[in-house]
Image 1 (cartoon, helix red, strand yellow):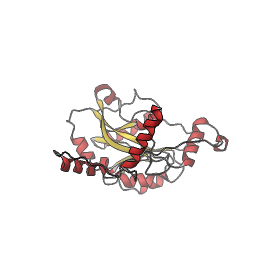
Image 2 (cartoon, one colour):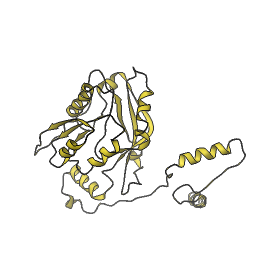
Image 3 (cartoon, rainbow, N blue to C red):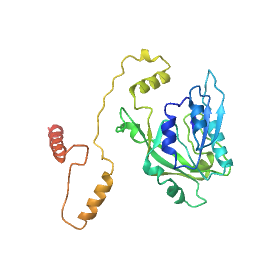
Length: 264
């Protein structure tokens, strides 16, 4: 983990990783809040690397990642999972992380990629429009014999080292990583102001349009799989209200209305 002033998000991040990873190696990039103290108190932190605070902070991500992964290699770890303080891996990924690593041959050079979902206004909603619906992050990889990031960009690059770029591949899996820092509107406005380099007060009143799409409830996939098993070989179709209160009648009615509108 590389961190700077993440005292608000860090406790929850440590909680969700605890018990799923063997240890945590963290780089505190000049925090001026309670980040350092939180890391000092966390028993799962095997090592904490620290950069001194600077009034003109500049991210040096290639160097940070090099130092972190090299330290993991020195400590004897075989695989590295990277996570920002404001991110949470879904439990289905963390509970299978050792099985996922064990599925690859000893000589495989891989980085495992999960889907990234930007939570929006609520822990139950995420953005799915445009590029937001296609984002992935390759954050789980085997530690190489030599760690280098010469081929990476200085900012917003990849976590996996050059060894994967040169000799390996990225393997996507159908599991998720959730980004929390876009949930609150005030955090989104603050980020917009940082990118535009203007005070938040000068943003005016940004206009947004939000369309909520129906999504399966937790466990829906298991329900459907069991129904398919029970209906196998039978000439029977079963439908139902599985999607957040939207009944099948709603979909039929809307389909007719849209057909009439577009066909006229």
